[in-house]
View (cartoon, rainbow, N blue to C red):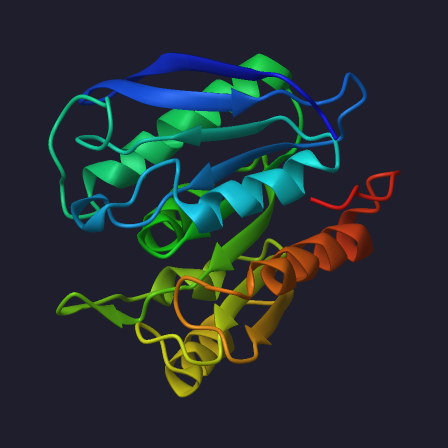
Length: 222
């Protein structure tokens, strides 16, 4: 596994964004961004799902960037209901591209998936997308994913079979709407936060990356 972590701030559109970078190997084939869940409900870079996703991606030697959306943690600005947060994600992707000049993977959990996908889908440097616990209806808000009809990048959707913010039927509708190539994995018995099922979530990410990108090394257990 890659080692070393950097803490710093990105210059975001609404002020500084608190960021953490888990460094990668010198021969890394990709760089990755992981976006956290809803900041108004406690979502930050330290969320367990975000952390375990980062560990899995970093186990391939990829440098992995996490950041706090505006108004979360030490990030400046105020929550913008998912609008300005798309620009925050673009800022993070642009930084990764400038820093590494590598193909990029995007991974988002919950709100982080709903907002970050909008930034990552049109970014030509992003070569793969991972959506964890994709919310369909949460906190009184209905999320729409029509933009996925034109998103032809490889996509992996992973959700718990008992996710309270996106039933299997609702997520299958989102999945059916999304352009190929795509894969859908339900973690049996898991709820939205994959409590007690994080290893299964990690295994699904690991298998998809190994099959799709063949990054040249077996990921270490993480």
